[in-house]
Image 1 (tube, one colour):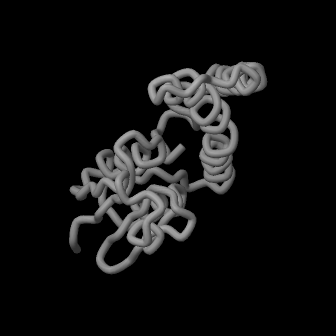
Image 2 (cartoon, rainbow, N blue to C red; image 1 turned 120 degrees about the vertical axis):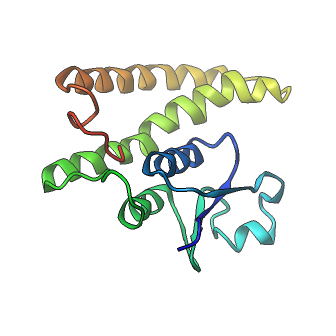
Amino acid sequence: MSDPIVFGFPYSTFVHIVRLILTHKGAAYTFRDLETEMGKPSHLALHPFNRVPILEHDGFRVYETVAIITYIDDVFDGPRLQPAAARDRARMLQWIGAVGSYYYYWFVYHLGHERNVFPALGIEPDEKVVAVARPNATNALAVLERELGERKAFMLGEQLTLA
């Protein structure tokens, strides 16, 4: 079995997730930076929606973070990161979905870009975007705090999961 290749951008949250899972599993991998290829045919050949991450392994290519990390957990040795019980797996998938749908959206896409990325690029932040994002981010943190308050070590209890 060859080492997988992770394609992506060095600062991508979702690329970091894939790399963390590979590292936790003890799997060696190669990282290929696509930043200069964004929107070019070479990138679109890897991911038809012009996004990252992408994983290539032994002639198999897959994109979308959940598909990638589930594949990694199933294929590579190391601690299992998916709960055996159906309800626990459902909760794990719920949290993975929440990160992509809510946490990333409000914290990274809106607040992070408006407060950090755009100013670094010399672009004036849109305070209307920030004003809408703040209460949603506050709510997301409250939900997370309630969940962690009911748990011991990790989101779903005592074992680390893909969530």
